[in-house]
Length: 109
Picture 1 (cartoon, rainbow, N blue to C red):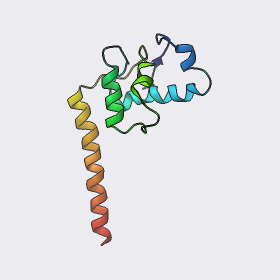
Picture 2: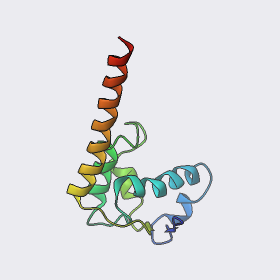
Picture 3: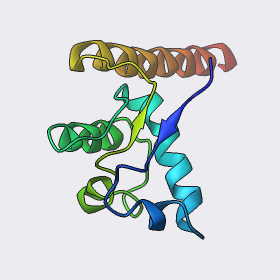
């Protein structure tokens, strides 16, 4: 399935698709998959931001609340994941990775 997106409803859509900002906008579009939220709205931008931070999708220098607010109006065809489902997916994946790493250390001893 393709990832369809639209930033034309963002207040500053011309800026978001121009120059150096275009690369960051593409990253924000793909971040919707990781955070499990397909649209940034006035009602959910805080949750979008928090999931990005908790999921380590960005380093601290790149993502701030103000940056995410600039994308209010962005929409993609990503389905919404409840917080519980998202936490289970993300934290479960992290736990699996740490168990895998621990097993590799054990095997090398």
